[in-house]
Picture 1 (cartoon, rainbow, N blue to C red):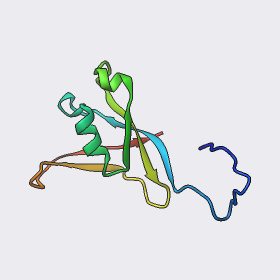
Picture 2: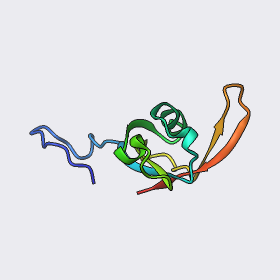
Picture 3: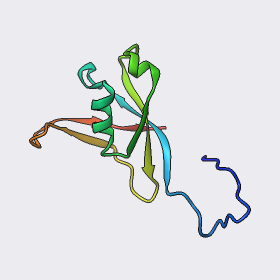
Length: 99
């Protein structure tokens, strides 16, 4: 649920946000890819990067990385993301969990 302040001229039929923030997890992501820069690049395939949670930033949780991204609700959510080198070679496929 996304709550926004009510505006007197608000019209439900015309004004509906299609971009919403959502938390995602990358299970079993290697510590080598848990920097904010890497997570931003990887998550950009699923949505616009907003924020990394504290445990991921401090690397105190090793089971998964968690971040907040903004997704377009009119598009299908990705189950997997191909993580590539700059030359386009696929390094690995990363599972994405939304909640």
